[in-house]
Image 1 (tube, rainbow, N blue to C red):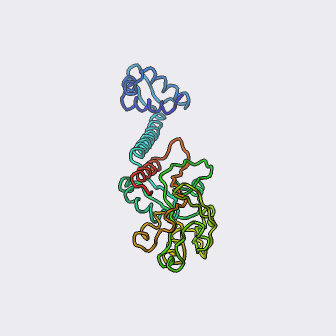
Image 2: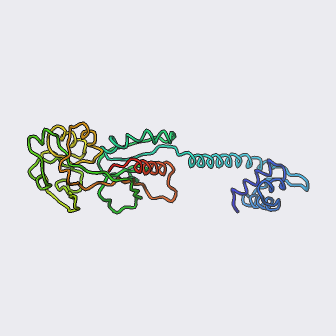
Image 3: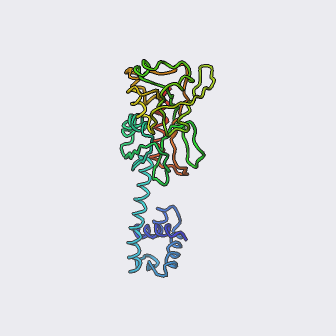
Length: 300
């Protein structure tokens, strides 16, 4: 016996005053309603209704049971409505992990537009340059800039691609000269991103598609590209950084592109989230918004 169905039948009988009316409201026959309540009484081992040929009345146990079950059904209906509303209008806390530079310079620039579209979602943004475990650390979604992703049970949605540029300040280049080829970088002070896969090896592609790998060294390595950018602006050396990190400094003339005939390997932006048959609406709308944003705002 489906106890929940029987509870709903009992409520309809009591509130509508007859088995026939209850059956009509539930879309079943009055005999099925009667059978459901008899089965419920049998399961409980107690009589809920005193029946006559024309009338029925709740027993003392039936009255108590009806009131308690009514509260249960009301709570279930309220829960159903809350879920339906949540599906229609995503809400709640969305915990996001992102690299430090991307989170502060790029993501924060378009998050206000996202929250205007979804005002009932509260953003909890955590920026760092270490790889977190989404499930163990309690994140709903992570954004990653990478040249490749390791095998994982996570869903990876590709959002876009970011150019990586070699840059230096005019003052540094005036002192040390302009490198003409990637191999010339071996004679320069190169500022290295320590969280990269191979910080001391930079890979370039020329206009003809040929690859050029060069071993570099320098007086600074850091785990955030923002620090490398500022060091490059200060004339400390040549840095390799994503376009969105150095874009403003290039526009202002604080930095200039080095080796413009060559390109460093780009990085791909991914949204990562746990696999689920029922993806949370707040995660779904965030990822969809990010996909649309980078379709409309190409980095390269």
